[in-house]
Image 1 (cartoon, helix red, strand yellow):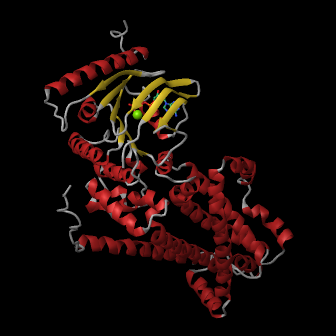
Image 2 (cartoon, chains in turn purple, orange):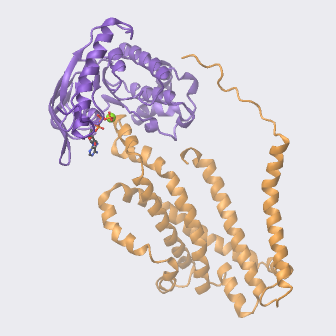
Length: 263
Length: 268
Ligand SMILES: Nc1ncnc2c1ncn2[C@@H]1O[C@H](COP(=O)(O)OP(=O)(O)OP(=O)(O)O)[C@@H](O)[C@H]1O
Ligand SMILES: [Mg+2]
């Protein structure tokens, strides 16, 4: 499996009369790891859903040159909520779901599911139901369910947002390893600046809404595995924090929440 | 990744004294409640005439008599068959109808005015019409129970379809599900709890319907048993009919719950 390129040209997204995202231009290279950062409510999820094909857009989104018109197997989606696992299926059946839809023979399905479940460290929980798993295990199951389809693009919306710091760290390291192993393109939404610094090739910072756009794009060339103690990483972290901080203050000022920032 | 150490090591549980006591209480207390009720009934009956309130012993005697001449089994069998046939047909048709209506807005809009109208008309209101249209035969009773059931099951299934988690649908779509597969692999299983609830409520209402239908037109059945008892001034027969109805309902509900728990457990 190799990554696909993603191209966003003058992308705008509106819900009724509310323009949420406007004029986003971004080219994502095959196999690149992109983190989307921005103030809460600016439209990160909205933009990700548009790439997934869940919401219609103005402008153009293409994946490997092919316009996005709806959800597709080439783009796997990992959701923030593990509610999206199907509670009536075991973990194995959840992971095999995509293959079963396409009529893959049971034996092949089994082998593949075993492989991907091992990849996310869930070999011991195959026959349990999602409700019997911890939050971190459920998110791993979700990731395995997406990866088994061998998508060229994986879209992740704060997949580790609901987890504790330790579990998150473990899963971040696992994700980085899986990403290198599969070579897929990843677009990863987060509000955790450190997460972005640890994982991304490029960090895209969005402006506060309404009609949010791209504020800055920060390239990160630090070698993996990255460390929070690293001086360069820290410099990057500070810069991103200031960028986002300015946007958050602007957003709050718009809502009349902070007077000091409204110059 | 290798935290397999404490998996599957369930602690073997031997029932402690307090546990088995609780289990005993679970069965003993309802039995005591029933015996207590019968006792109060018995005492009350000694103060009145048998026509007003027959004693438990009299009712028991009547039940034995009717059991021996076969009329009790015949009545129970007739009612049970009608309920089962009408209810099963209603569930079998109501589920796909509900799925279809919940899924396709056009079908829903077409059917909505009728649903909103008929939901306020109890099946009993149709007894006379059913007899006129379908005659006094077996089919009339079954049709009324069918109407009772299909309505409830369809409405519940629609509610189920509407409450399917939209994120699960999105997940299925991006995992490659077609519209049809979305229906069979996501909407159908998500809706099972609603169907089961609908079927169970419909079962209760079917008892209501069967009695009224049998009172109007039936030679046999628990409803007609209760009604003919009036002509002979046999209050004890009325009691036998009522108790038989209650027991039949209890048995039906138990069987239904057992079957759904066995076969549909993972969806509930
Ligand atoms: N279906 C919808 N209809 C109308 N408005 C919506 C809809 N979905 C999102 N919005 C609006 O779009 C804006 C962006 O929402 P979005 O969920 O994309 O934000 P976000 O950047 O992901 O925020 P967070 O970090 O809190 O997840 C919000 O103002 C929200 O109210
Ligand atoms: Mg979001």
